[in-house]
Image 1 (cartoon, chains in turn green, brown):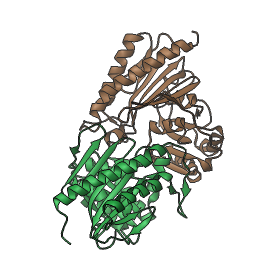
Image 2 (tube, one colour):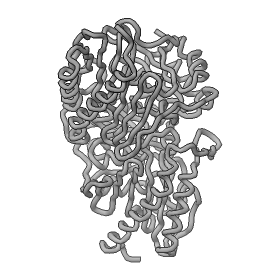
Image 3 (spheres, chains in turn yellow, purple):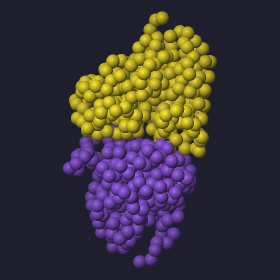
Image 4 (cartoon, one colour):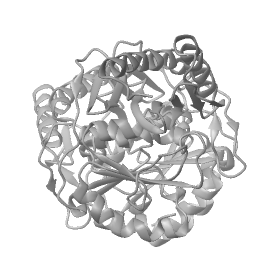
Length: 278
Length: 278
């Protein structure tokens, strides 16, 4: 199949906005409401909220109506295989723990892959009213009531000058924790608890890198086009591309991710992370 | 001097809003701008931004004009002793690390003490447009464009059911880290990186407790009236009141704080924290 044209990408990007708007309508009334959280996983605490499920249903309905041949992979409702190369990869509420704690740095993640490679991504923070989008060659930011503005990662000459983020240091295995601790001790500043919002900050040039582990396709598909469209780089902890082949449909293992704004920071970070790479 | 009347408290609360508005006007244009951060402390990374300094100057000017006999204690510009029992205790940008990382969970803290005891507090998040206020017997929340609404802490029967927060697990000494780790392992969920915003979430009934250490008067003076006004409790790690006497003017040591929404959670948390209490 031919590579999507720029007209097609523009159309898909506008549709991504429609999907994010639909998710907002479901999610926002449930934020800071007393909602029941189910305990989904056997180990750890990963609540599924009504927000997550309801928003994924709303997004799926829109995709199935507009692009019935597109595939859909969502955290809550699994895979519908693609018939034409396109697959939407969805996490309606990334950062569920933040959501249930009332903290507004969760986000709605909407990614679109084409033949196994990421194409378009959106990170939407509904409560603050911020949306970050990325596509081949560009990325932008818009806050409700404000103008749409292009975003770019910033230059950072070395890890010692860098602002680093990860969601929670407790997500790491022993070897991973060692690698991350080396980064933390070297970086100028480290923040915890960002979830997808930290990647948006890298894309916007406020932070320099994010390192995480244990991620699923729906955690990363939307992030990659935003970071890359803003001039940054995303890889696993070996420095290889994430995804490729069928990874976004049938991932294996425990995906490690490194997102940076400047290649010089990536090269330094990989020295530590490679030793703990899967 | 007589205890402030409810009319006087209402007047001071309205003035607190004026101060928070003035701080916003200085701080907001600097958020996510490329601002120079100075390295203030000998150990660790604690940048002072133009936002912090400019907002404190703006707040001080308003207080000196309106209440020239009131004392002022600010993180940036030190102490002006009170002549009539009232002292404003200010941290214009609490969560400076979040601020420079582009994360919007920093806050402007404006506290008012009367004869050494906390009286009024405000936590203002200028970018999101949220303000939390507390006074003897009450607390409220308002988001720009929304209605003012009373807030209350929530019931929580035990630490195992609780959502816990701290700013950064790296703030703790060894013994403190041991005490906190016990809390973290017992609590249902732990979030990092909240700074003052986590206390607002306890006051609002989204979280159940915050435990931190190494705090200065300007870090806590505004928080106590918000938590207590919403029905919660604030103490040190022995369970004793924070402040008292001249503490808000001449603090000593490394203040440890525990803020809870429900006394049952405090009692359990203190079992762990007392062993690391100063």
